[in-house]
Amino acid sequence: MRLCDKSPADLIGKEFGCACGKIHKTPLSYVDISSGAIKKLPDVIKTLGGRNAYVIADENTLKAAGEYAVSLLDGGGICSVVHLLGVEEGFERPEPTEQTLGNLVMGYDKKCDIIVGVGGGVVNDMGKLLSKLGHIPYVYVPTAPSMDGYVSDSSSVIYNGVKSSVPSKCPDALVCDTDILAKAPKKLILAGIGDMAAKLISICEWRIGALVTGEYYCEEVAEIMRKYRRLVLDNAGAAVNGDKEAIKSIAEGLTLAGTAMTFAGVSRPASGVEHYYSHLWDMRCLCEKRQCELHGIQVGIGTLLALEKYEKLKYIKPDKKKAEKAALSFDRAEWERSVRAYFGSSADSIIKIEQREGKYSPEKVLARQKIIFDNWDKILQIVEEELIPARELCDLFIKIGHPTSAEEIGEDAETAFCHTGDIRDKYILSRLLYDIGEK
Image 1 (cartoon, rainbow, N blue to C red):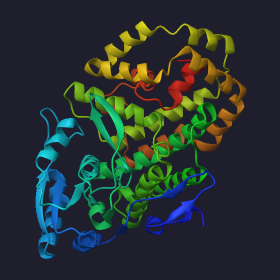
Image 2: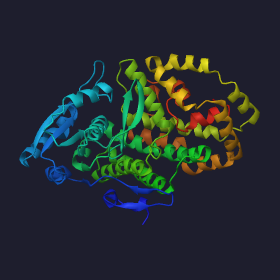
Image 3: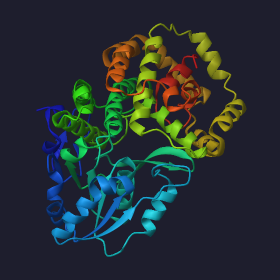
Image 4: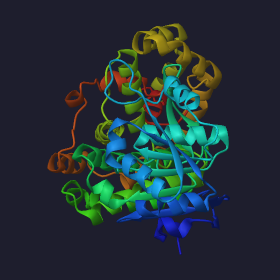
């Protein structure tokens, strides 16, 4: 049986040898995605050796499921200490910053022997980081099908003003109650759909990146993403109308997206340039002290923007001399001025990243150009095989009420795209366009 044909529960406690050369496995010891799953939370905690739980939530998720979870723990003989993530001035919800993590660490009660995260992406990212730092078991109870990091072994955080994906710890157990998820606000369900739509771009760019840079790629992991992305998009209409089976399909897709990242050891299976739009908007919002849109909504818009740009890519005929001239004329001082103008206080961190990685080094660009020009037809074939028409996704988004433009959420698309290649050494569309002199 192929990995993509297995359910989340089928993957627990097993290792899978793969043609890619890796042994795929997940540290997860328990997964339950079902109606009423939260009622088993005390037993799950006891199985993991927990008797005193450090419960992480925010004000909204405490009401959605946190208070009920604490009552279940009390009834099951498990003591609990609740920590609510704070909201910084100018924001409506917690942000994954150093301050948020620091407050979480400072609030930790040393008698606690297990961490329980009840909430969305920020709660989970902080819980996974604290679990890794303290070598403490972690149980995650999601309150909405809104993001794909349920069971990944990385966390999205803003450090020194730069949004990054950093190693953390995969939860030991996922207690995913579909009754709770079905009650989530429609916008959070839309966010989960947007985050799964992103797998169109992520797999396309993973394949292109493997071709151009020689990076690791696994077809088995990629097929997991294709299968569950199709499942989620096919059931999107029913999900936003509260259909529990459709909600369950989204939850399974989001869970397997995180599992795919753990299998691969990188975020490639789940994120590409569409996530970089979101990262940049997050950074700008934090710098300007204003609330960003939900991650999945931003990623959904980024996916649509990327699809439109890939459609234009099909009509580009790369000019080798033009590309070489552009590579050799890279003006680092001008690039730094541009970075400082866009990133503001985060610019120094971005510049240091480039000094370390050398993404725009003429020598590296010229080496990539040779591969690109020798394989341009293959690149276009990958685009044709992996992507759907932008119009198709746009029509679906309009039907379900998902925003379709950056303007709808108060963000800029074009300037952001120009800087998506600056923040990390991942080969994405903006890097490809730069390499062929079409920045």
